[in-house]
Amino acid sequence: MNAPTRNPKLLKGDKHDWEVVIGMEIHAQVTSNAKLFSGASTEFGGEPNSHVSLVDAAMPGMLPVINKKCVEQAVKTGLGLNAKINKKSVFDRKNYFYPDLPQGYQISQFKHPVVGEGVVTVDMQDGSSFEVGIERLHLEQDAGKSLHDQHPSMSYVDLNRSGVALMEIVSKPDMRSSDEAKAYVTKLRTILRYLGTCDGDMEKGNLRADVNVSVRKPGDALGTRCEIKNVNSIRFIGQAIEYEARRQIDILEDGGKIDQETRLFDNAKGETRSMRSKEEAHDYRYFPDPDLLPLEFDDAFVEKLKADLPELPDEKKARFVKEFGLSPYDAGVLISERETAAFFEEVAKGRDPKAAANFTINEFFGRLNKENKTIEESPISAAQLGAIVDLIADGTISGKIAKDLFEIVWEEGGDPREVVEKRGMKQVTDTGAIEKVVDDIIAKNPDKVEQVKAKPTMLGWFVGQVIKASGGKANPQAVNDILKKKLGI
Amino acid sequence: MSVDAATVRRIAHLARIAVADNEIEHLRGEINNMLAFVEQLNEVNVDGVEPTASVEDMKLKMREDVVNDGDYAKRVLANAPASDDGFFQVPKVVE
Image (cartoon, rainbow over all chains, first blue to last red; front, side):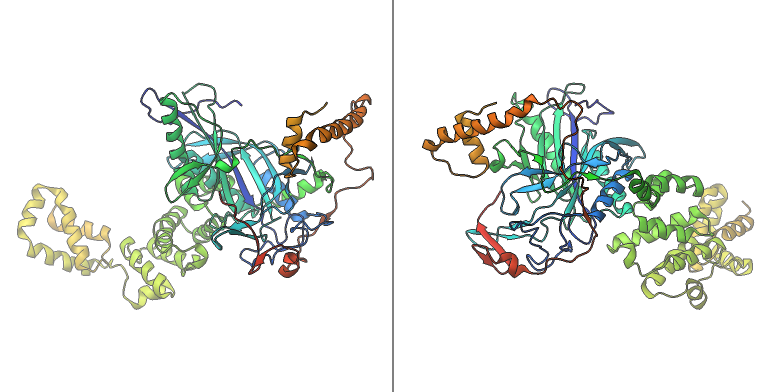
């Protein structure tokens, strides 16, 4: 496979630098009510084996019937990944034995996936971006769940997940650092959540990654890779890559060679280790599932899904930059979730978008993060936040007081305008009142008055004193003007 | 195409079927006979012919996304050799 050296973020070695090459297979649980081939529920957390039909338990004579919604979700995702949609695809059996796989095979797609090549644009923290090629997306069944800690000599098997639809999204080896890999998963997750095709809940295992890592001397052919299975958080993906790349470099620099193998990430120890039980080379003996005809649909099916696509993250970001004049970074923060973008648009409606963006990002998101709350759990509405932005814009309150006001509305609720009125938080622009305070400060500090005449930058000290004396309510511009006049500078 | 004794052992292992050493040769003969029989199909020219998925003129049937099955753990577990508290029990398998 071709994997060009790109803007390499090299790792230091004893002899020379190393380039890390990363590709990923993401398993994303399809959002649907029923399973891929049965009418059992996909709901998380039911009683053991309650969301299981006789099809999912692989009872003799049971036949799979495909869920149309799952097909639509896969096609929608393909469209969101700018990918080729295959109007004819085939389900195959991937044969292996494991207690949580009652059929003795997984129904998957091997040679003819429903979605072909696509591309995802990934944005980095520093404002740069790069592209990750998508190799394919196919539909397959999830397996059940084994529990090993319930009994000294037995494993316990729950088939509730068995047969739930997954999309396996395979990337090309287009990432060159753990940060790029994390940014790719973050972006993919955002796209899936915008599309509503996967909820991206990594804690529940609804999005998990198999990470392929290899290292090479920059410009060399690809090195031997190891696959780290089933990593279920973005942070762990980063840690697993860092550890694995270093492990491979150490082996190679000691004159050793890398064994192509499957490894597990132990998040308690922060290291990867070999899965010995799978040392035997995989031989899945794929063949077309005789219980299922090829999956076929027409252009109209695809066009209808295309017409119903929501505005996707890239489009929304571009619009925020163009329409609202926001920086790409701010726009990127605002669009990270569909809900936050919608919230911001409501705050910005009829207001200065930049002011709205600043207050939303710095105060509101800051506070949500601090309390680990989602936007749905926010005690403050877009209308309340907008009212605070209005009060700053029309000069009723200062930016500093706005923070206090935000705090009060967050804790106690209420109409921001009324709160300002009741608590006397209005900014003082009355020059008479400010002059009195200024005179007072000047009279009390004759030494500072001497200093400021020699050194005009001292003015800041006076401004600070006056605003402090006014309880933060004096308008800073008015204070500045009056001070300059009175001090004769 | 024909298989050797090692391949027979491998196929048996992959299928988790216990095959005694003295059965291998007999099975090898049977498998090779079947392969030879199927191999006659190679004589037919199928250039430009789409693989046949079904002899009936049928399309894949689809279901609506409705939950209408499940919720009968007892039935699912009825034939399990061992179960406990709603779970299947199997000999311990740990990575």
